[in-house]
Length: 370
DNA sequence: CATGAGCGG
Image (cartoon, rainbow, N blue to C red; front, side, top):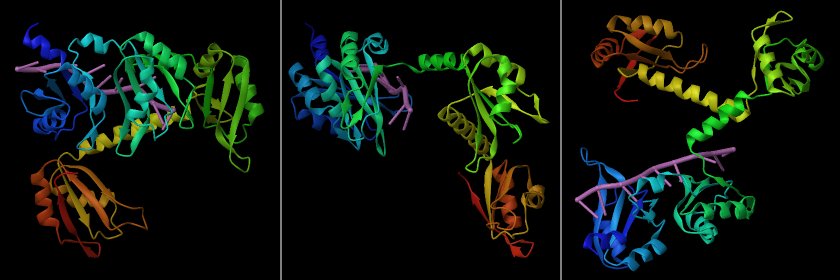
């Protein structure tokens, strides 16, 4: 056997490696189990940025095995490392065969505990409890070498209790598969959401309106604690066809003088996720609009509003955003103005700082970054 | 509630 082939057998892949880890540090750490031939932290060729993984090449296969058995998930610079045999054949890793997803894990279940619970089903290529600064995120992955091990683990562990919590164990699904699944489910909806109807519409009336599209399983106008209609509700049909038709024909239609929205009913989380995404998008756009330079306007007179602030600063250049904080009557004496270039912002700062607006002199500060 | 990341000299 060639030297190269021999060493390859004793090569470990070190994943989830902290950017500050050094070859020296890894060398010292792994030398504790046996002689280390070489260490390589992989970096981007152009930038030299660490790629978050490394190789440890032992002289002896047995030492590599020992490191794998005793040092997996050891914490380096605050991050648990993930050890695997070096496996250069990408398709063996990427096929997804044998990969298992686990959720509803107790926060106290760490990488080692997870490993202990799942290693009896077969050889594990890689496993990991997902975590952030707050600790475990309550879900994990175990990638077995063989699908049969994965099948057994799912069969044996799904619904089992670990640390007082019933865990969910199922085959891993990649994002594309999950999205496809969701959209199939969403496209076959039977539950319909109706909003913006008047409080003269009750369950009975709503049922009367929507029954013509098919058999309804439930009709519910949502009400507040005093029983007053909130102007929205749900109609659940016994078939997708009926629900689809109800949306198609009723959306935008007039019910007792009000134009209503009719659409597929979303789950609360789904709706929240959508709103969150929209919010993120808006935030991004806002950041984009402040790409130039931002001025903090302090000591702002309470009578000044967005429009007036914009007018006062408009002569210095193009303003991408202006905002006075707080509502009319309870302003916070603080506003911001974004220009499209630093030159404009600097000019506005020098000329406007100390200028009296309303009854107070402005105090302006430059914010290069947000 | 929850579906990573991952292979050089």
